Image (cartoon, rainbow, N blue to C red):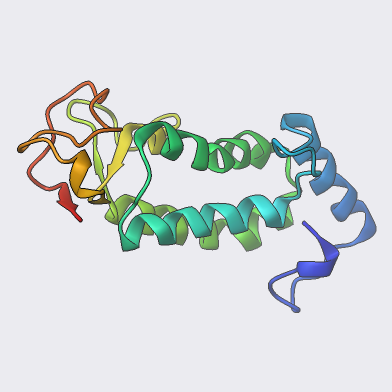
Length: 158
């Protein structure tokens, strides 16, 4: 976690906890693609931001979504390494964001909705695309690599 941007003033980390959180994140991934150091709060904030964009209607292609949800994979890998108190305090918030993401997405047919990195096996319910990217009732451009037909529950709008 970042001391500068702790979300809840009632939740202050001891020096040992702070170091343990930083070490947990660094053991999984040290920097963002641009070279900036990763922090727990930045990863968590990114996951919340991606979830909000998916709820509103995702306007990028499937490979971009895979890139955007990378932050959730890092959180999952670092989670067991976090101090127990951090897991206890932040767990319910992570669960709420995960549930929002589940509600804003559709599970891939025939795939587990809870096992492993389940967030990689979901697509947004609302896809915003340019009119030139529309293709009949199937996936729009940028999503055609999906290994299954577009579910009726996925709305495509311009």
